[in-house]
Length: 237
Image (cartoon, rainbow, N blue to C red):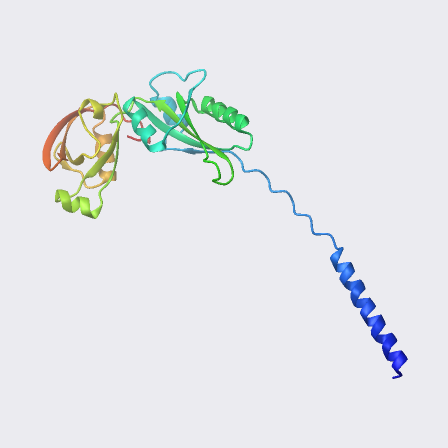
């Protein structure tokens, strides 16, 4: 190939390469579809759905629930439990519009018949802004304590099976019997309490009766008389 032809060929190749680069540089970025905002959601607590709440509530629902700013979920639950209120649900509301989120939360409170709702705004810098709301109702609980299965260490500590009471609700049979958080329940009358399921069955089978609970408190075994209320099916404790 002649030198002039070779130079012309190289010049054209460089021009085409440059044109390709310019074309690629000007290609528009693909448009991403907008991400839809998260939807509000509501979680039922302890099986206390609308039917259970309607059967067990202590008084008709208020026209407008009492609305407060929460301090700490766990400490608030114990405080309001001492006042005879129990959690029925937890709501999550996207809070890019803070006022709109509060309005939705209060509307949900009316829908579920809450007596009180506590609001917990998400901490600054914690990601997508969210308003968490805990809904409370005063119920006529037939026993009135939350209890759980024992760990292996706890069974070894008391030398057998049972359940531990983790919270006592004020104004209930458990509260009237002076049961306390941290008590181990070993027997109902003379029946051994092996685990949470056994204790739930015993409570249901003795509804409306006065029973003796054998408990262990601070390494001392005590008996407590409890007059149980009527336990509605699937109504919790």
